[in-house]
Image 1 (tube, rainbow, N blue to C red):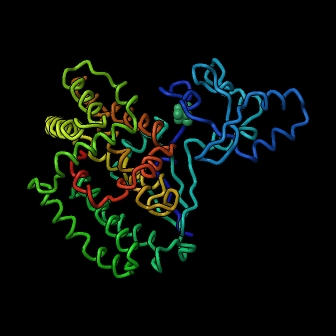
Image 2: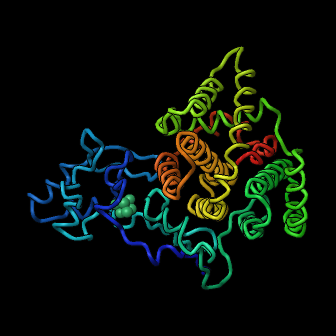
Image 3: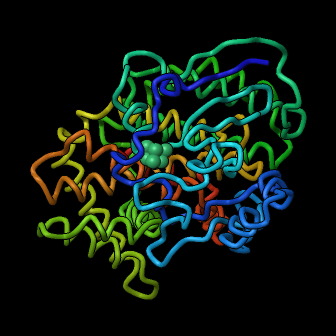
Amino acid sequence: MPERRLAALDSFRCIADRCPANCCTAPWNISIDDATLEKWRALDDATVREGLLGAIDEAPCRVTGHSYSMHRDAAGRCVQLAANGLCTIHDRFGPELLPEVCRQFPRSRIDGYGEVLQTGSLACPEMARLVLFENVDAPAFRRSGSGAASMLPTLGQVQVSEYLAQLLDQVMANERTALSVELAYLSQVLGEMAQAAASGALSESFFEHRLRGCKQALYDLNLQAKRGKLRPTAELGGAFWAAAYKLAPDLLQAQGNEGAEAGALLAAMKQATVTGPGRAAARMALHERVLAVRQGLRPAIQRFDKALRRYVEVEFAFLGFPRRPFADNYIASFLHAALSFAVVQLFLWLRALNADGLEQSDVVDAVYMTERRLGHSLNILDAAEDNADLLHVERYYGCWSEVF
Ligand code: SF4
């Protein structure tokens, strides 16, 4: 079986008490897998058994499907986290009795269709730092193994994930094209793919044609973007940024509005999420502000082009695009990664507007905090279920040209 392994896994070491945001204090459910629960229930020592079972909550998790999670105190810390920053379970019993997620985090193994992926969660600040800023000239993933891809999902008769994986490789290898244009291109292809599948016209030749024409299509789109011809309408552009803001308003508001420009951007985003007669005007006003902010901050953000490319590449893999699409939905899986990237951009804009320039640490913060907010949640999928228009990515593909 072919395998892809995130290179950063080799040098990752948990930095524990030096970690700026210990994972045991993050505002997420720490799910307990069934095998661990069974181990705890089977313990002979009643004090240990009841100590462990007494510190869990019944909390069904839609992401993992597990029914229990670790109890957290009023401040949101896992109750097994001791004052010295170490895990009580690990300290007393070793890794054997830890829930699977605690044993593995931030490492992750995904058995995708036709591939084993060993990757890492960028919700860990140290993993994010390594992925974004260490050995950036080497490939983010190493490939090994071979063998026939098996059990590939199909749309009609077409093995879609294999073709999309080849297309994604071509797109991401093309560093001469702006990342924003690459996202626009991918959303265009996905939209066309969905339309072809709905009308029963999806065939191998659909992808073969695009694989052959990928370089030229990217070149053409890049040219359009440079000439300002890839832009969405002002209302659509504003709606796009309002949708990105709505995914993590608390995270973005927390970046502060000390600067007048940051305050105005936050206010415009909030205003554009309202419903009613003023919405179209608010969206257009937001779009105008976004373009002005983007123009002013491009040099500051473009310094981190390589890091942000790494983010998108690793995020696609982590979220199963296209090898194991979230809920078997290629477009929702793409949107999850790409909209997270849009939130990272808003975060960085707000940071930059509130300070003099951006540092590496700001980029690491933007990535791990966005991942904690969105990486393990279903809210992008929920948003797509509530508003099926979101899945028509071909209608707003030009919006991606305004990301970075
Ligand atoms: S978030 Fe990462 S570095 Fe921080 S405590 Fe958890 S595993 Fe260690």
